[in-house]
Image 1: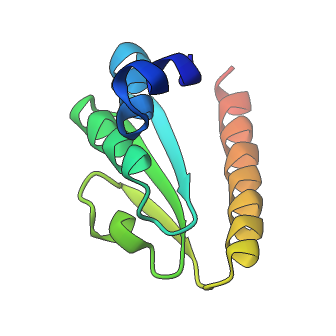
Image 2: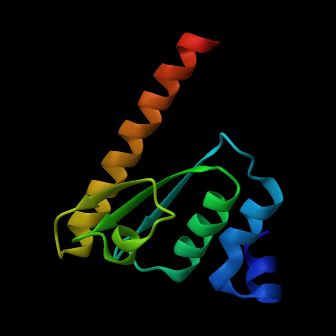
Amino acid sequence: MLTALSNDVGYDVVFARQLAAFARAGDIAVGLSTSGGSTNVLRAFEEASRRGVLTVGLAGGGGGRMAESDAVDFLFAVPSASVHRVQEGQTTLYHVLWELTQWALDDRL
């Protein structure tokens, strides 16, 4: 689906279009961008926000444009200019968030 949408409507809206089709209020959208300025991720957050979806951004440095966006509910910024360190930090954060989500869902299931 990713490559078909990218080809047909453009890479800038590839994630936003998927959220428009499938996201519902109460869902959670997580977006990663090393710079915090990936247009496709920011547009996805805007679409998610319009739909009542909780948005969580993972970025590097000071968070880039994610830090300035009203569409990002929670932002985790890895304070580094090193792409490698940022991506390592994002991977760790993603796994911690996933574990916490599973733990929270286990209490409800």
